[in-house]
Image: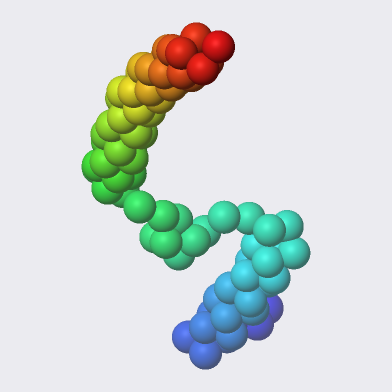
Length: 88
């Protein structure tokens, strides 16, 4: 029976590593390296808080502006009706 030495074991280990890498790539599996590109949970929630704050401010501003536009529309209608009444 043949015995394996350190070089044989290293060659087997290298072959297994290459095979595993090929399977990971072929199947499109996610690796720890892939996950390292994602933000941490704290970074994600921090950014989401920022985005939600901006969204809330925009919605509040939109409500205020909508009310102002409505007021201006009412004033314009009143002015136009007054002008039409005075020209008749």
